[in-house]
Structures are given as structure tokens and as C-alpha cells.
Length: 113
Image (cartoon, rainbow, N blue to C red; front, side, top):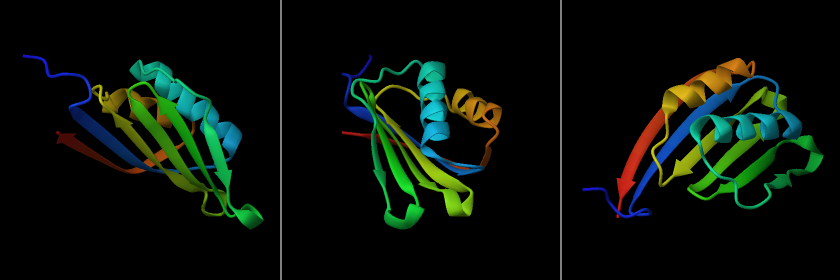
């Protein structure tokens, strides 16, 4: 029996190496959303740290949210994809690799209410 939407959650976290800036991260997140069939519901919010240290990119999706903690000085960042809908990890990693990034580490977690 299928459980009611919102009772289960999956989180995929990825440490990503490569040139990061808001423009490239926006494109990466949008490509991931398209690849895994998620639905953006609001405009992304971007919070930039002083002195160009880094930024946080948050894209709400109907299924939950995608966040990217970008560190241009370190040539990389950390991505969290949280969803009440199943996440196809292979599709996400294909998009990351096809965007000239390297997935350094990837973890997956499931939770239920």
C-alpha cells in the first residue's frame, strides 16, 4: 500500500568539486530538477556571504527543497536534495558529471514519520 505524500522523506547529499558561482549552480539545480521530475514552486533564494567567501542557494520544490552551499575559494560546495518523492541518485549524479563537476562523496538517507 502506498503511503500518504509527506510521510516519507529522502535526502541525497553530495560534496561537489569544480568552479562554483551562482549562475552555474542555478543551471545545475535546474538541470537536476528536470532530470528527476521535481517541481519548483517559488523563486530560488540566494544568500551571499561578505567578502565573496561563498553563498547558499535554496530552491523550494513541491516535493521539498534543494540547497547548495557554495565555496568558490575552495572550488566546490555541498548539495542537499530533500524530497518526499523518491530521488533517482543515478540521474542526479549523471547531471553533476555532465556539468563538469566531480561528485567527491555522496550519501543517501531515508526517514519516515
